[in-house]
Image (spheres, rainbow over the protein chains, first blue to last red):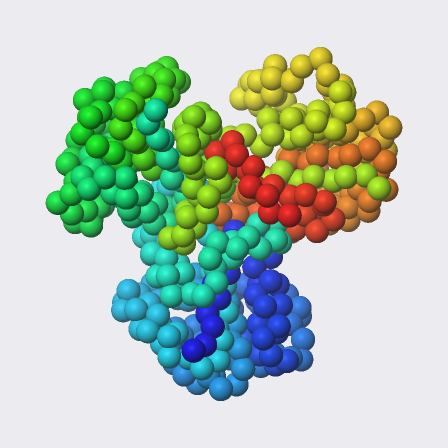
Length: 168
Length: 168
Length: 168
């Protein structure tokens, strides 16, 4: 059975760097499954900074919506790093997809993988309750999705100031 | 002396589910002390979802303001689960009560309980400083109240993605 | 070599109290390096409350911008407590200084200290993505700065409800 590792933490806590190190500790080459789409200059700069840190050991597979399909397409090619889950959720909500169904399908697919999957997600629920209903819906969905993935993960780490704290 | 357990974490991190399991691990029946009041449809849906998860092992005692009275009224009826502390604080502030006095009274009452008390609270201080003064006052009060309860608790757990991390 | 300890956590989580206890556990007298400037009544009240808690064991050195200079000026006078790093970052951004350069200079200076340094910082990245770009810039910078300081620290503690959780 393949290994699933969930890496969570706040913005700029060093999650991606730790996830990349973990994925490459499992095999010399790995697949980076990017959920990001560059809609504006800020996002483009963020994606470019992420890509610049990664080296030639990485194949990139960009997929904003069909993560289950991305798992199927990349299984057998080494460890996969999904970066990140909350952006995927945001893409699903934006595209008015059923995120609960997509999340359940993804959880089922995880159990069927041969190669390991390292997943980066975000803690978004530790601030004041947001004023607007969409933001509340997003943070509720993110919290629920994180719970479901964590439940089927072999390891869960909370990243604090660049340091992983093992939760599971 | 009775046992006090504090469960903290972000929104939708799985705090309530873990608190329920802990309370029912202490006795076959428990009392659910609900601080929620249904002011709108969103809140009603949230309360209904919480109630649907709980089974017949639970007696419900609704109390938005007088938590110390609720402890007195339910002691001797098994473990109590208070869900949640931050909503209680919000109710106190909304009703223009003295939350410091109510909090101190509640802390004193906790030490006098015969039956255990499991308390759910929220992490609300790990985001950007809120723009408006009321939100800042609330998050300051919540942080201070959490500290005071944690200081007298036998166990404190931080819930991350549905997993409890023991802090005390 | 001197010891560097980083204390992080949410608003009103009890970081300052724990940092003060740690600094005074290292020597009978310590230097409080305050990065706060009182721009309004709310800030004045916050500073006064912090000062009231500290006793006569503390010398105070106020420095909103030049933390590296403050380290040089106070080395040899016992443990230093810097409270707090995120306010320093906010001061730098407000004064339109190059925070990356100032941060790198500060990290270098830390390694050269003879007396210990305890640093208080804040978790600001665990809420919903802020609407405005300046707030996003601040939380990104805070996260990156926390990572850099944590990497050179001997100990890192996450404070939850007044309780330190050792991360490093």
